[in-house]
Length: 248
Image (cartoon, rainbow, N blue to C red; front, side, top):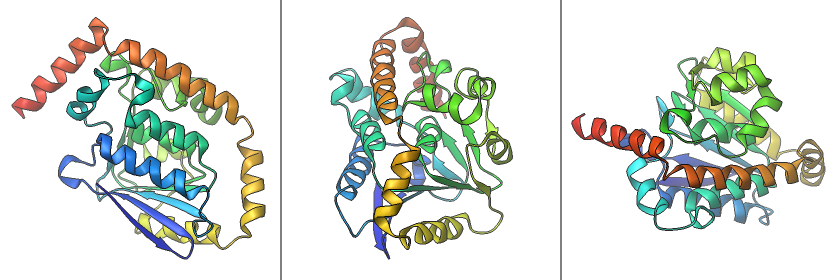
């Protein structure tokens, strides 16, 4: 589930499914998308803050839940696609607080954030290729822009895990925080929310001026991602994953 609160202009969206390491379900994607969409026109919301749980920002898609709807509808009709479009269309500053694992979409959504804070034990990883899939959330465009081709390839194609320190060096996160990372991230979000909102919105818009290219890339990735779901490679990888899960 997603728990929400609003404090001094900061809407906090907390991933709250610790028993599953915050694996994201369709309902959780829908709730996140609705929060970002409504925030665009809500003057009370000046900044979004996305947090997880101790030791788990998110383990990525709940594979079982994802496969239930992924095979029954077009990718453009799925909750995850709605969330990705909401990320691209988000008009308010977005801050993330990571403590622990950030896998799959938990890693790629960071590329849409304006400020990212992580604890030293955080690990960021994208296992798309290992599942027979391709990168998503516009990460094939944003990753090289943020980290350079070599490190983006290492993360998105090789799927190698990045420690918090490595992610900081790569420019993916702003700060590695030894104290309570949520507190530090909230303080930053409150600082953002206290700024003149129109000036903040206009300035942020300049920084994200390539949004149309990003929007097109999200669509391109989604089409290929959808086609890959029925590929022999992906079917084999998902079967292996579900078998391993049932034995654990």
